Length: 311
Image 1 (spheres, rainbow, N blue to C red):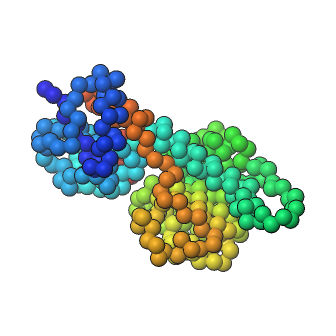
Image 2: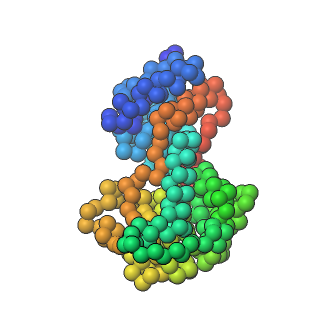
Image 3: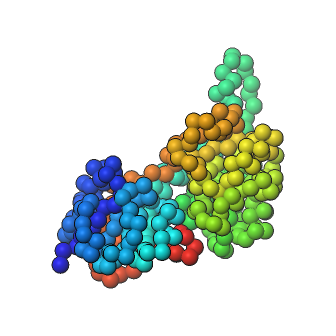
């Protein structure tokens, strides 16, 4: 029986992904029919992306062994009640490295005060050095694959790093907190806060007006996680009052961010167009191929989604 893999990542992605996926499958010794169209009852695996050609009803896919996401976030599909097949999110070395580079770069940018330096190229000599990293506590909200990698890198540089997660976790050289009291403790101590939580009902508006008020005056927020993590109106209020000194935002509730949105023109906001961590076809295709191999061999799949938790 042939193995059929349905690519439901969208027509625009197919030319980018086809060759790396075929190559990764071949290197894994998998002979499969990789296609963008197939009768549902013949499909063994679905490769999915949120903005792609995803089925509304997974019931006809009676032979499907797993749905394999190209993205780390699976909130747009995890709640589909017709999806009874195993769902795997993407954990890709290239995606992780991209997020580490984005977070580290912007943490260092704010820590070193590079914005002010670039604005003050006026011929005046002002030899004021920033503090060392040891004086700038960083809070990482979310200690999954991405959050843990960012926390470890920042700790290596010398930042005191606090990590927060909903359940208890342990990371070397990172002060780990969990629960409501732990979140409050991190926000009170951190001078830079990085949000890397998944989008769930429990995390929506987790940074609201009450929690933003816990931050140290002038703290920096970096959000490459999900747009729903922060209450937009509360953040604008905190920026206007100076409670938050700057917000670097890569993700938004509506994307592309509407041109009339006040984030675009706010002097204390940096908007980046959802570029913090992209899925790289070359490396991610190997993750997909390995899960296909495991599925065919009856082995445990990697990066299974907890459907109740939503990630």
